[in-house]
Image (cartoon, rainbow, N blue to C red; front, side):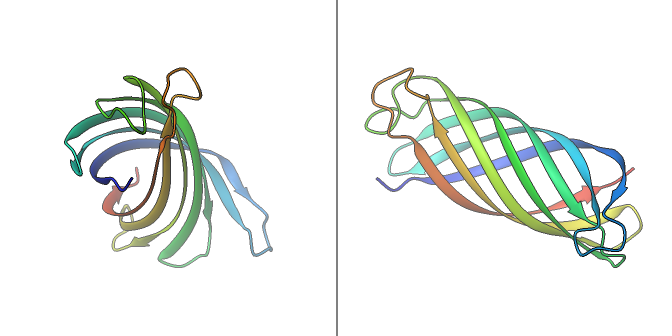
Length: 144
């Protein structure tokens, strides 16, 4: 079944250590992030969702205003979505993303991201078909 969702996210990250891979194409640093997201399904039914997810992100240090990244995360979600795809309120979420920060100022960037999001109960409830989504995100990021 197709589900149309609208999500909003707020995240906070902390860079873990110095830049790695000096002199190589993969030069960059690791970032530990926490994300709080919420939103709603608006088609074919109406349902709500809220989730909390820790992420591990790798930022590629290009030395330019463009900083690409890859991101993975796994967390918990509460949702009002039910049968035929989900069977309970408490669910898990898995995420994978790729994107880029475009720095418009030293500490400000426009961030564009493509994200895969999977929500399921990991077998705690029946049914457990899960929800799978590919989302496009755009936002503003402040680095301090």
